[in-house]
Amino acid sequence: MRATHLAIPDVVLLEPQVFGDDRGFFLESFNQREFEKAVDRKINFVQDNHSLSAKGVLRGLHYQIQQSQGKLVRVVAGEVFDVAVDLRKSSPTFGRWVSAILTAENKHQLWVPEGFAHGFLVLSESAEFLYKTTDYYAPTHERCIAWNDNSIGITWPAGLHPQLSIKDQAGMSLEQAEVFA
Image 1 (cartoon, one colour):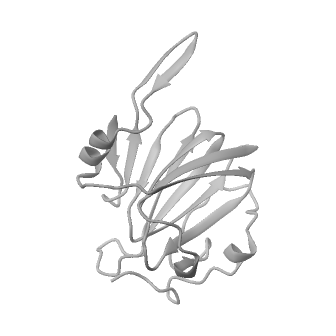
Image 2 (image 1 turned 90 degrees about the vertical axis):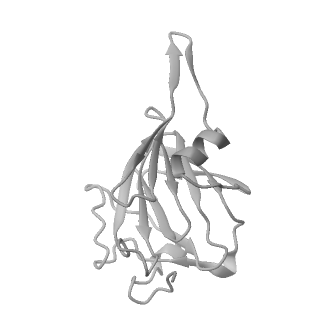
């Protein structure tokens, strides 16, 4: 597995080694030892999630203010523009974002650590999105930052009109949001 630390170094793009021929392919989608070496810390995942979304669906920017979740995300069908926003007030990259294109074809994964908001926009006709989390879903602690907050300035792919849930339509600005110390 090749690990690339992005412009916010705690966010890591992981590229598994893929063995393929005319019959198909094989890859190791998760290896605890290799993953911990790539992110340089011990991680314990407690929950796996799987979503299906149509083209133009934007989910996020979600985080939990308590029981903060680290997420290892990947796409097994389709293509998404995946985003992580640093919400750690003490971080030199507070309020900044990084992104990656995750597709079923490239098989890349993104590690989004605790203390970050996360979201994605579906670029293909549909996308199946899988993610492992380091803590359990806690709806009372879930928060949402507006996907189009100007103070963050995410450059989303052009040409799509995002479809948002009611919860995501009510996302707040970074300035109004509860963040991490």
